[in-house]
Length: 126
Image 1: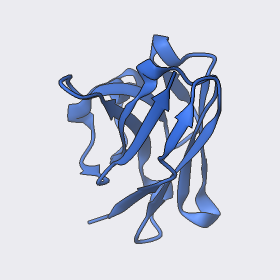
Image 2 (image 1 turned 135 degrees about the vertical axis):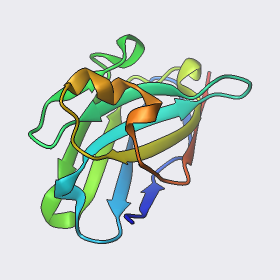
Image 3 (image 1 turned 30 degrees about the vertical axis):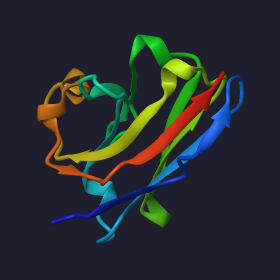
Image 4 (image 1 turned 180 degrees about the vertical axis):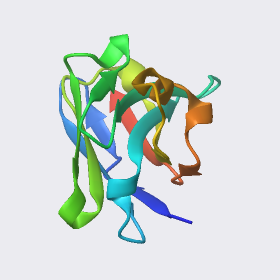
């Protein structure tokens, strides 16, 4: 069972950038698709971005053009770069790993993911 650890969350001012990392524990990141989700206080966890095993990237509309996801298989690490942050981006950010699915659009769904990290807090001040 792969274990995921997110790092990089912190307090930042609006307009700034941040990079979140997600490291897998067992050297098998190349076997999974990677997703990023976030959960704001009092709200449900929502899809942010995903990258499939072959590099196909998906983004939620609110972050398209501002966030970029990537992965470095040699380091067993995935990344989410957040640009031009706003207070609406505040929340706990989770990375997740999914076994390959037939349709890439499936990776927008929480239920597609078998493994989850513990989350990292991102707070954007105005």
